[in-house]
Image 1: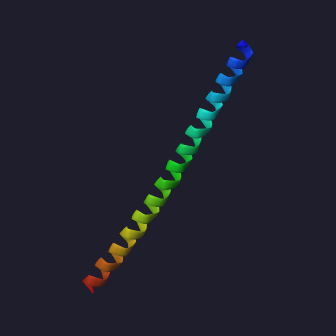
Image 2: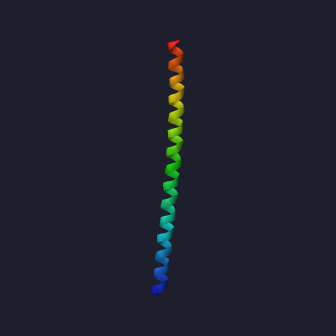
Image 3: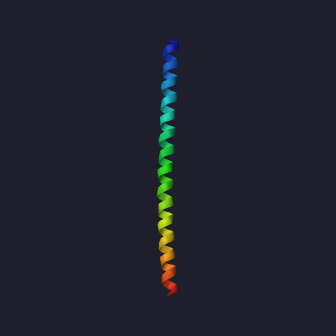
Length: 54
């Protein structure tokens, strides 16, 4: 009985760990996408600004 509770606890702890790792990796991917979008927007604005100076 005690073993079953212990193993269930370990299983639950492992599941929580996997979920946290998944959420962390998804946040990292979203941050990269957002950074890339900002970089592209910055380059577009820079090109427009350079065109206006001519």
